[in-house]
Length: 395
Length: 138
Image (cartoon, rainbow over the protein chains, first blue to last red):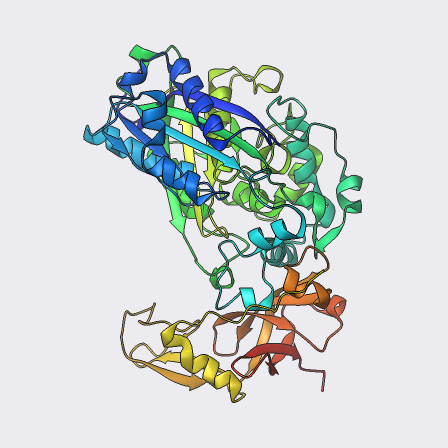
């Protein structure tokens, strides 16, 4: 096997179930996930020399603790040289992995622990207070908030324009929720595991036309962690390293209305960069772990990354190509729509799932013979688009 | 439910002329003196050519709807009494994009690419919001 092209390798993963855990503190999710990941990698905890936690939306205090070394002390990670929060919202895992690989290549780290925990369900107000708190997160207080902008409405704006340009129907958008739910039914870490139909999605409350309640993610508690090492070292440490083959990104706006094309965002560029680094194309990808906080973003990334022609994704999600057993399985942990939204954990979760799929350890939702996966993340009001290509081998 | 006041725009220093303008029923956007491109929202430097030579210009107020949504539920508290109301991204004749509300309309009869024009809606003594209405409405 040629080992020149991989940027790094994931050798350990840890994840706690997504749900509502009133009595559990966020640090417990972080520590449990980190311990699972370290044990999964089979390394000594003292071998972790870099920690990249990420911020949590529910608590500035917890975020500050993670930034200032609580994990180092609590877990006795005495070998740590660098503890540094990496935070870009839902793309935090993409940026952390990129920086981890750079540090590994530079010789500044040997084993990087990426870790994330959130308490969005039980650590924050719920009901209208929760709507208010999240409504203004990441929105421009000068150019958007005074007009009533919120996460549902901005997502609805992207959806309206996308459907106008492509002719995609409401039912086809609803099919994304159904597709993700079919995977979540088989994921013990997912919150929503009951079967879902198009009719149920379409009968749910209208939030902001054409976006309905069941097309919206819900907020939960949870956490996850990964251990990254160099591609050269990985095969000596674990039997099944998962290689980081390509990474691409594109930062396209800050204020949502200033996005030059909210029917595409930056996923085409992100994908092109990642495919180039990996030396692969969409045709080589066995599983697409695409960020899905709402159907529109999953549909757009699916198309822009080359899995179908523009405007074709809706029909593909509807006819089952992305479902278990389908031609291009997509978002196989159920995504934020069915597993649940745990902040930066949205894309962390998909990275963990990519590793499981490429190791062949996902049980009944395993994509047979999966060798290459693409994973995406996007932060804030979809300000940046990231694509990461992973492989069980180096092509 | 106690309805809090709608939030005032949190104004950046260099954007102050925009809000002074709306109070006078003028839609002022920026124009780069060097590359001659219109700019919105107001910037300290031209985001196209990096020039510091930026002037203010009055926009025509004519625009088309790029996208829109009718907010029917789960609005932030201050906007709950307004539901259903329309949030839209419009593209001004000068080429810049702006988030706004479409008012004086049948929310469910709106369409992408529909022509709209600015209307100034006074919020309080300090702030007037530039909102838009269909051109057919008089």
